[in-house]
Length: 196
Image (cartoon, rainbow, N blue to C red; front, side):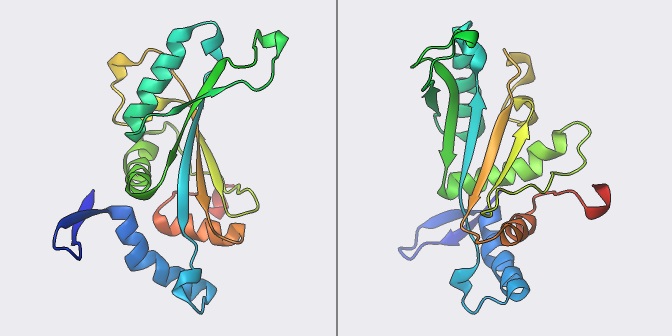
């Protein structure tokens, strides 16, 4: 999933496939589509944030350990444990209880995760008909997965709890149209107009 490029010092360095695609194809395509006078104005993918809410960890501590283990396997980076900031008596939740895990990916890990998501995980989603085109107004996009087992890093026979996650793609695009064009060029399978 990576290609080898030469560093100035002469050491071989691998560049993730999606990053190479961005540099070789996406920048040129977006420059011609939006008539950017300077290639530095082309929107970039800044980071990917993966969030797992584990509200059931209040009753069962093993759920938090399983979420940390699964997210570490998926991302290759240990997640941060998120704690409750407010108390909710109806859910038996107190301030400071662990309620979720989150990972922020940048650089090569971000590009490698994006490649695995598009090439391997999304095609394994049951009854997949394309991602909805709902951006946040600032060029960022969030998608949800109902279970972690779509990632090949997760061994199905060792899954303790089925756990969903939210994946947010943070771009520096000025508009949703530019953010949509960037993610489409990178290979995100959005719904076609006729499918809506």
